[in-house]
Length: 334
Image (spheres, rainbow, N blue to C red):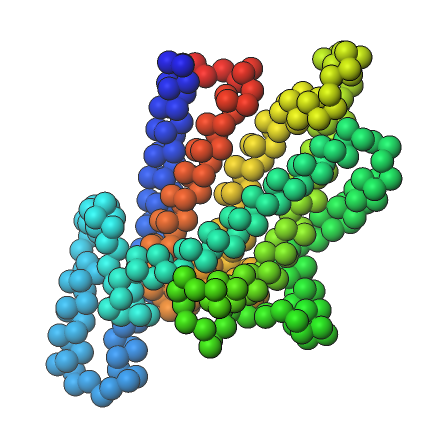
């Protein structure tokens, strides 16, 4: 047990190092951008009202002090981390004066609810069916299912998303194709809103699941096909061990370990995949928010989205990494 706690401590330090380096790199990239956030705000204000030169100068000075753009880069960096520790990344430029973290917290449940749940469902379904297909190699249903999985797996998921959008949005319009919920329902913990959210999430979630499960299915089937020929599986079958026990305790448990590593990588790609998926279906998540922030030159909001995404992915990978020693005693924890 002491070895496991030491393993957890080392992985936690690695997670913190990844978060620190990732956020620092994002800060550097955004602050080296030629876009000046102060001038972006002044441009919007000037387009809405006729400001005098004195008002523009005073506003520029106030905004420069607020965002610290007139300070050296190193001072801005330390000031950024001081504000980040307090959970304050400043106001958003495109929704001034709303704090950037407030906008991120509004959008994050949509992304987590849609893509993380779709990724986990894909992982479970794909691996379960792949394990059964690898164990029952002569089953006609699993052979046909394997052909379907190999056919759809190479297709980019945004192509599948467009196909679903055309079929169920135009040819057979039975599902909503845009937004996170209907405009005529009141957000809250009530059934009309919940049912509307579920309906609006069907198409984007299906596009992720259809493409994603093929990779899990093929990978798990290949792993199980090798494991079923091992001596301990053969001995268990000769000893008349229950087939469910063989598949669950002997086959899947040994084959799932490399798949967990792949799951950590898949979770790392969740926030990159959310950009295209949410843009196709106009879904109100972090991907859409990030695109709007980049287009508006709102690097406070870009930093907020990137910080939350990097932290969430690092924590998810950390949790998955901790499952390895629990599932496979061969994994060293010292």
